[in-house]
Length: 135
Image 1 (spheres, rainbow, N blue to C red):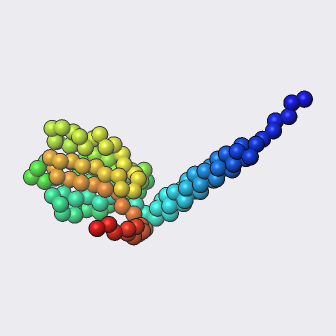
Image 2: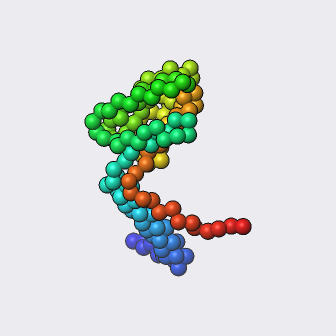
Image 3: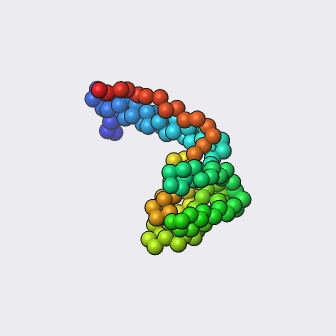
């Protein structure tokens, strides 16, 4: 019977692969923990029109309707399933519909004709410490 003999280089390669797999797994677990931390808090849609805060809306499971009427146009927003989306707009391009139903932290909807900007924020502060300063 032929026995498989592993050389020293084979053992080193196996150990390197195990270390890389472990690092990838740990990275996924850290990312998952931060996502769970964010989802444990409450999310909000921060709505700005013309660079000014128009409204901040808590994202809930229940449906809420938000009408935005300005001299630049009209948008109708729907909050549902812990997200927000544009369902009606009188702008000619209708680009704001392409963003769809956003639910994740830092996702955004932009409507240029109305000068509207919507982003998802959380009530849990995120660490924004500097990694380095380069001069």
